[in-house]
Length: 206
Image 1 (cartoon, helix red, strand yellow):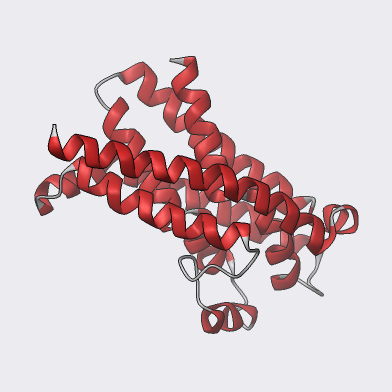
Image 2 (image 1 turned 90 degrees about the vertical axis):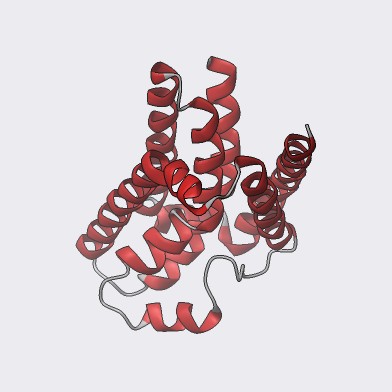
């Protein structure tokens, strides 16, 4: 069980990529008060957690209703994660998270907690695909499923902590440092995405 949870933590952490939230949060809250930053970080984390838990609980049932097999979702999810990994490796804005137009719109919004922080950056397509893929494997084991939800909460709490510490971290890392970390994480995510695709193809023909 420990090995399964550690593996999921690594995958989910890399997909959510809390490090990438540092320059994003800094840009969206530039010139804002400390109170506003704290409020947006806390609200975004809570909303992302609710979205993730709901998806973990009802996502598999939704696939059943739609007639989509878990193997097919593994292939689709793996492909999506691979595209995200490529964006991370080349340190470019990911279209799978939000478009440039959406990011510009977010800068003009007073409440940035729901969009773009909670969705699509924290609980985006890649994160939700990872949750659903793992939930399908552990749903029949209550203890493991509980641990799985705790890992989701843990990663999102890390996001919250990093957002609160953004001013100090930006001085330490800078945009270049954040990109370096993101690129290394992207390589790991690419390998994991390929494994998802391979497992999906194997499951479709066995």
